[in-house]
Amino acid sequence: MKFIVVANWKMNPSSFREAKVLLEATRKAAESARHASVIVAPPAIFLRDLKKGYKGKKISFALQSAHFEAGGAYTGEISLAQGKDAGATYAIIGHAERRAAGESNEDTRKKVAAALAENITPILCVGETKRSNSGEYFGFIKEQLHAGLADLSGTALGRIIISYEPIWAIGGEKTMSPRDMHEMAIFIRKSAIEMHGDKGMGIKIIYGGAATESNAAQMLREGDVNGLLVGHVSVNAERFASLLQAIEGAV
Ligand code: 13P
Picture 1 (cartoon, rainbow, N blue to C red):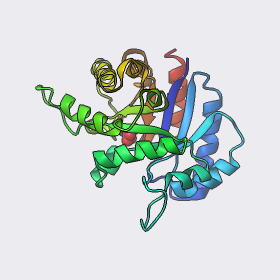
Picture 2 (cartoon, helix red, strand yellow):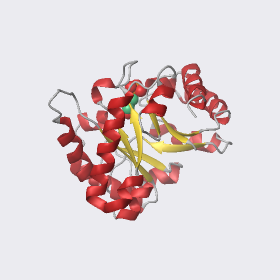
Picture 3 (cartoon, rainbow, N blue to C red):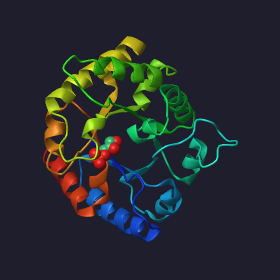
Picture 4 (cartoon, rainbow, N blue to C red):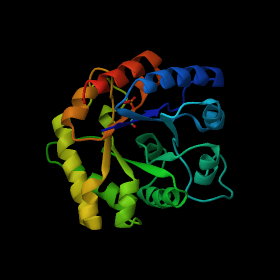
């Protein structure tokens, strides 16, 4: 059994030299982590050279974001085909920070379809900004899922990863409670089943938001998830190595 661990470097580090050093440390840590498949999402500008210099087998690469169109007048954007050409086999879609910058549910729907067409595995992010006791966030998550998964066939569900990321937890040191994650995982599967029948049962779900070396094992044991999407801890080589080690203890 292998957990998926996505290292989302976001807009870090500031130079290619540092990115190489970080990838080398990540490679070493990933190689001794028998129960983790590591996916590194570096800034796109570093992707091709990092991939070229990487000699191992354990790490795959992801785009942090991509446009759904194959080409055209979209200044500053990157297409999925370009990402693939540079070495990406995964793409993060609908990350909270991209949604905050204007990415819509409709965009995520097109991006998921475009990624699958390029044979890139979409990592579709969903998550609410805040929670209250009335549970209205379930409706919000359902809407995000219904949009993002609308164009899929049931069989394509096996080729997609859902990353549940409560926005209120991102950037901190404390995840949501694994029990609440477990509840959310059941809800996500139920929504996928509603849309695509029994195949929805097997959909892969990971958790993102303040995953650290201290809480990773508990989240994986109790949260009913197949892995983690890690932000700030993934750009700290020592902490990320400890997180991967902690996962070994969760198996
Ligand atoms: P942090 O791990 O820094 O909270 O970021 C996680 C994240 O952005 C989830 O996508």
